[in-house]
Length: 228
Image (tube, rainbow, N blue to C red; front, side):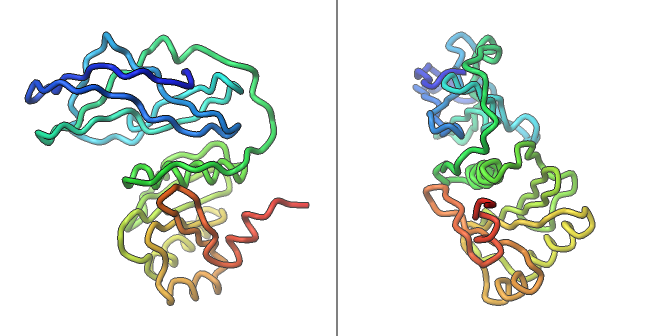
């Protein structure tokens, strides 16, 4: 996948309206922008249902060779149809320089949707050294669950403050899986939730509109501080 993605024409399968679509770029761990290479000869398809594994595609950075998973390109037509934009299948095999072993610095992804919030949380966890981040096998009662070896994370992308119940559910999930629980919230936390997280030792992060994960308690600040 290349660092730039040229716009391609996209035809709505429902109303026939034609659009010009350019895929958004995302920051690689090395700092270079990456974007999926679109297929100008492919046909867009309507998104009728959501499957987690199909929500993400592999994008390889040509600057450092690192491959990461990002949200697949989608376009919302004014008629209400959501279109899955075709990606060039030949680009998946292209590589750049061999990736290094250095743990990357934190990078940001602007947050406009719930999927963006999840992408920002995934990127922050990768920046902390957790490379194999995936959707949790058991979804939480609220929000979105993520998992990596030794990590259980919940993402609350709603406009309401995260409740004490949400923090307790994450703590119980992490306890059952012998993992560290980490919580990300878009709107912040209630006073009770912060107090309970401090007692339970749960790191709390707040996702800013520009996609940064800001520590919201002492445990999160400790987690964000490099060892040594």
